[in-house]
Image (cartoon, rainbow, N blue to C red; front, top):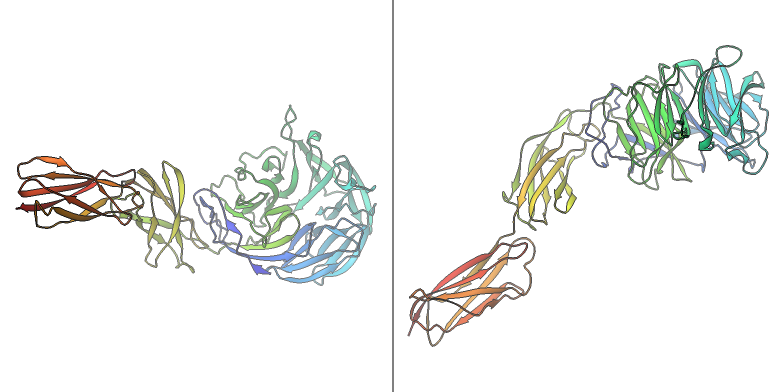
Amino acid sequence: MKKSQRLRRATGAALAAVLSSAGLVAVAAPAAYAATPSDEVAKLPFTSFGAMVVDDAHERVYVTDGNKNYSGASSVLVYNFEGQRVGSLATDQPASGMALSADGATLHVSQSNRILTFDTATQTRTGASSTPYDTPCGREVAVAGGKTWFTETPYTGGSYCDRPDNSALLYGVNGTSSVNTGWNSEGRLRIESGPGAPDRLVMGQAGTNSSNNAFLATFDASGDNLVRGPQRRFADAEGKGALDLKDIAQSADGKRIAVADAAYGTRLLDASDLADAPAGYQPLPTGAKASAVAFSGDGKYVARGADASGSVSDLLIQPADPADGTTPMEFAFEGELDGSRVVPRGLDWAKDGSRLFAVTTDGYNHWLHVIKPPAAQYDSRFTGTLSTTPSKPVVGEPLGIRGKLELDGPAPAEAVKVEAVRKDTDGTTEVAPARVAADGSFTVLDVPDRLGEATYTLRFLGDVTHRPAEDVTLTVDVAKAPTSIELTAPAEATRAGGVEITGKLTGQGRSLPSGIALKVTRTDRFGTTGELTSASVAADGTFRIRDLPSKKGKTVYAVSYEGDDLHSGSSAQATVKITG
């Protein structure tokens, strides 16, 4: 078990308010940010994933590997709320689904040939009930109406488990026996129950061909037999929009059902008729496919998991009420130590919302994350006006943008940074972040490389205890870098001996181009001006001028550089008295 360093806060809009006293706060930001709430992560000894159950009473998390073969038993691994492995529950056949009884006293575990029960206080096996088939296809388990229900996929060999046209059955448990409910379908069945509606069982069709137009249905489990309630298929008249079911969750009050639909995103439905809720959740980030969904037991939050690559967000945490406009907290799982996406059905909450448990995978390895959002968050803001040094920016020359950031609440444990981007004719360029001093001051440093208007957008993306600040912008006009010419000339010279003048051309910003030829003119005491041979500038900027003047008296030598694409022109004069 370790503390994750690679889980990153990821893309999103400007920030919003504290979600609750438990501390889950929407802290999404306009660009990826390395600071996160506390995230403990344990590497699971699995190459597959079956199910996860959270036992609040004993602060334990149970995880199965969903092993799909007959070669040996698998274990139900037990972790504490800090992500430390504290035990295991022995099964004599591969284990897959799990469900916790309404009182939390009994854990039901499906293995390939029966349903086992364990006492959650002692973690000892207390019983078992038969199943109609001995199959490695795996089962889902749910408790609704005080009874245990499980899915069944008869096994006939080969790759039948994953075929979209296989048989899928729903059974109940009666003592040590199983009872066929008579409900069946094709593909796989997902079942879900929840404390908000303890007598309701939700069942959905998964793993089918899209042309099958998968269904979602609810059942009243309060009586001896299941009574079907509303059902829904999602494809339109043209067959588009069919459900690709990955996970189901019921809200804490039982009024809403959320569905992780890989083809659509997160669907939020009215539990009474399965119609779309009046307001839904915002779409997942582009490129993310819904894989998991879970409501916190206190009814305040929803977590939405996704299968996404790279820095695209894999996890969003936000208020359960979609009418709350608070921006989600977004995370991207990246790297070989954290996984790269949330697995289907891989999210669950501690009842009080203080912890979110997430299982991630890289396609082979699996990890258990224990995400503990901060206890509180405070506002932040940019104050005063931004200023620049130098006051007139030039191309190729360092530019400092000075400002001040105010942070409410306690001082951050680690120094915070201000991020910046520059937008000019070349597009948008990220600028190195600037560390914020204890007094809130900072200086963003950049070297603009294009002439003309450049707009800098400064951002504070938030940290564990502070919400992001509203962005501020500053537009500057980037000018050519200045040049200068220094001349060293004699005060007097003779016509016969001639005049020798040395000099140096210097420029700010980018290096001056090679092969520069300076214009040289001579003006005698009668006001006659003539152009002399140009002066060639050496690599170190030096040059030399030689002349044999024909007139006596005060003579003015003028040297000028016309400039280039990145440098302005400059000139200098030297006056020499010609005698003899």
